[in-house]
Amino acid sequence: MASGEFVPGRLSTRGRSRAIGLVLICCSVALLLSVDEVYGDLQRALSIAERLIAGHPSLGPLVFVLLAAASAMLAFFSSALLLPAAVFTWGKLVTLVLLWLGWLLGGLCTYALGRAVRGPRARRVVSGDIDFYRRRLPAEATFPLVLLLHLAMPSEIPGYLCGYLRVRLRTYVVALAVAELPFAAGAVLLGDGVVNRHVAALVMVAFVGAAFSLYALSELHRRLA
Image 1 (tube, rainbow, N blue to C red):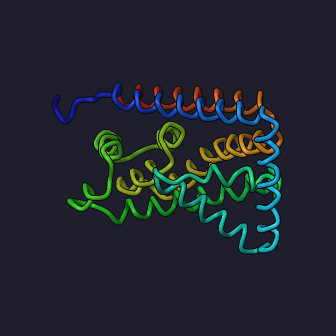
Image 2: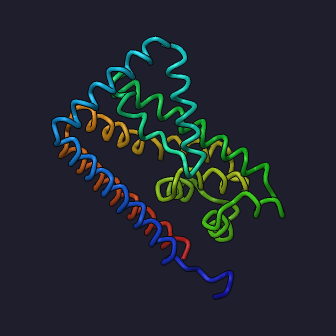
Image 3: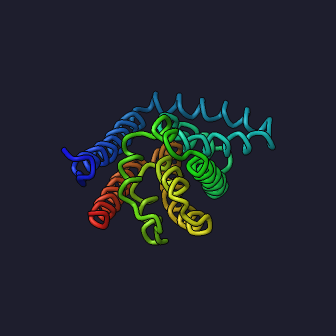
């Protein structure tokens, strides 16, 4: 296969795998929450976490924001496990703001790293997916395309790409802020579903989020093709 050939099928398969994985995880969690003993243990664990966080009123939010930033930068790290404790302690609105700020910080860090890494060094730090899109995105990426990239791809990829391609910082930041807001809201709703045992809402948010991500990925591939 030629290196310049557009092969959306491979990446679409990965996108479908991520979407299916999200749905399966949420359905599994929903089933576990239906067991009274499991939900009781969860509530006790959340109460312990709340006391720990309350004991550090300034440090707790800062650590949460930094961990959210790390999850936006690293494919193998996720702040999802922290969301139920955060929602239980601070409520949905505060958790949404902190999560959104953390993801913005992580996105800015990946953008800065993308700008710093050029030439032969790039191959040492970027994944195959990042390199695939780097070769196909236009140098003058517009706001709609950057926004679509954020909506379609895992959070760690758009920042590296846009930084490497020297996308205007203002364009990148506005697209990042707009795109991360619905994802942050969905993540908080998932956390709230776990905390309050909203099993139906948990599954519904998972299906809606998976379908939305797959549509955005399909639309991105259509434009690149």
